Length: 89
Image (cartoon, rainbow, N blue to C red; front, side, top):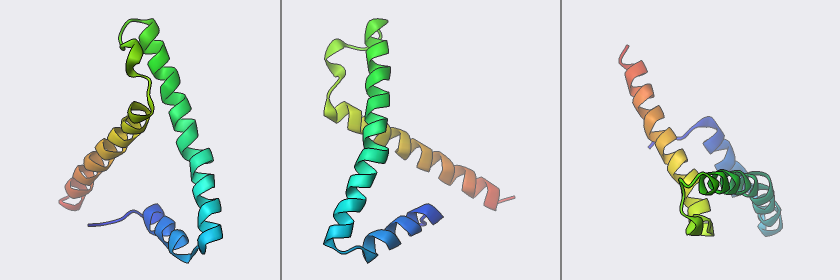
């Protein structure tokens, strides 16, 4: 498995953290990355509900976690294909 440069950097930071620093780092990721994404997708789902494209009972934490996870997976899978094609040129 190959890791991106940001992935290596993130792992290095996490491995160097003591318990207190790890807790602060986790809080930073939660408030600076995860919560803004959830807020964005909650708004997207609400607009879809207003247009009748999304069921009204679909805004829950599982869905708000799954949407960005699926997008990240798709991005990684697609990027791996691009990387392989570029390596073959």
